[in-house]
Image (cartoon, rainbow, N blue to C red):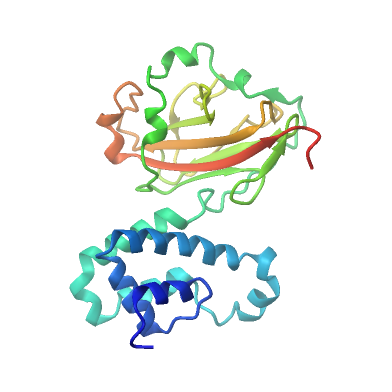
Length: 273
């Protein structure tokens, strides 16, 4: 298939139908073509979804011992001597694709609070006066691009890209930072002011110790009761190193150092199934 152009190669990428040589030509072309790069990242999302256990469990079980992961394939390709001339750009491509397509919960398991305290509203988690601490143009915090400089994880108690919660259902959120840092966690529904979930009335400081998982709400405080109206929610985690001040009124001072990851979930009426 030496005469195939990048468009044809991209069409076969999701289903894993490319040879090593074809992958090499596709990745190299993406380094110089922004549109192709963006489409490659989207195709990788589709390829990961196609390989999810619930979709292809019987195939994955048979191939798990022999089939390399997509990250292993890309890493092996970048280690080839003839590709070293692209080293700087290739590293940027690899990192960018990883940030774009890796699930933002990053393997963090979150369960409902086993203490089974009464569920509480999302707004009651906030520290009193939180809305006064958000910048006047708080939406700028959601315009910052997603990126991952630090090893941080964000998860909710349902799996999937955009899990669905009925109004009144219970929800719980967790976050951790491998080497510690200062964190801000916001939940917003389009067109509404966000709820600041961390820091909160239970954790008054932005600091998250290294390796510690913080749950919202914390153990013994019940779970969050999902409220209306129905719609799409974004849960955004912003992390900076521990020696950087997360000044919400001046994001330009820390944005370049920030790790920003996000989960989405959808709220539907209690009667929806």
